[in-house]
Length: 492
Ligand code: BG6
Picture 1: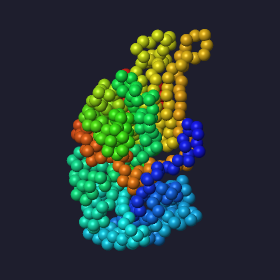
Picture 2: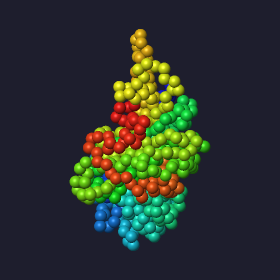
Picture 3: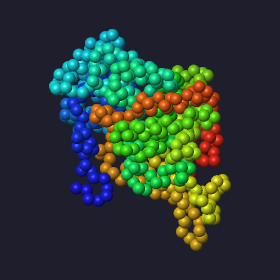
Picture 4: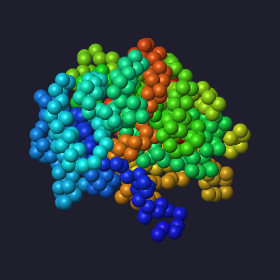
């Protein structure tokens, strides 16, 4: 029994009563990249951790032209787990998992193999298991797969996980919601944004609402600006077909970074349940000021236009940085700077809140060499898994003179908790969907509003500015945040 104030490691991960009902999980797009990298390895890890229900089956599906037999699907899964899972595909646990896998092809108008596979899986489980579809298909296929599931009768009483990006603008997102709602009630739709499954993002809620320390200063009185910064060192890694039509704004900003902003900026929810959390997040989105293209920097890394599958005069951005304003009492006048891009100097996941200067500056040498003021205390949340939280502040350097030095206090997830129970983002979110808990999923209303906010930028995007690979983005990023500075790379 843990008696100190550290995490009680004897506590089960899923609190009592949070065990999913028996399930048939259907992966649509089971032969694709997402299934191979995340879903199959994730399901195996959940099974191994004892977090899946006692009785479950996993059915893979894809168009007939691309389909597998059961044995082939099992071998495909074994290879995926060997390559991408923390747990090796061996021993009785693998055997038990492998035995749950089967495959049934499906095309619009011909869904018989999938229907038989699902029926067979349900028969093997017995009783009335739930059905969960995971749409791991390209965005252009969402609509047709949903309609196909509706027409086949398979969608009845089922839940569905839909991948991002949800639409490409306001009109397409609305049309997609109409298609979805014709088949699945909103309470059965789980729009996934895997950033919301990251442990450290949940921890933003804990940090803010479980402590008396931070929330009282989490507002415009004390915070001068906020940065949500997700630079990536990887380039598009051959994903030209997806990326050319998407770009960083749709791939990362209007999705992952805005969802994070919702968590950072929300009011205290009435309870930690789906309704309250989504309500508060959606309220933040309602108060977002429509994006001003003058406050957006779009960039493209040098050499992007030469990549295979990229148009020689492509205007797709591989980088975006923007200033976002929230018109409510807590945040009025506090800029939120968002940045993400490919082929940058480092891959990081950071949320930084910088505090206002004290009203009186009475210390000598209170400036940086470049003349800017020192002493911007900050709270930096690094939500890389496992992540850390750093508070930066000025302290007196030892000695006879009153000299200030920048210093920090660091909470490091990895060194503070037992990691055995940690789940990857996808694992966490699949489990939540099986439990029917929509807290960490996006709502139709929220997505609709984000596309509405994005309209002025999508209609009138500024030209892309080139930037060197391995840099922090185009020159314009410094202008965008003036008089502030980017926290990365120097941590000011
Ligand atoms: C995906 C984007 O949703 O998120 C990718 O499509 C991006 O372009 C990825 O690289 C980043 O996720 P993570 O968890 O590695 O930061």
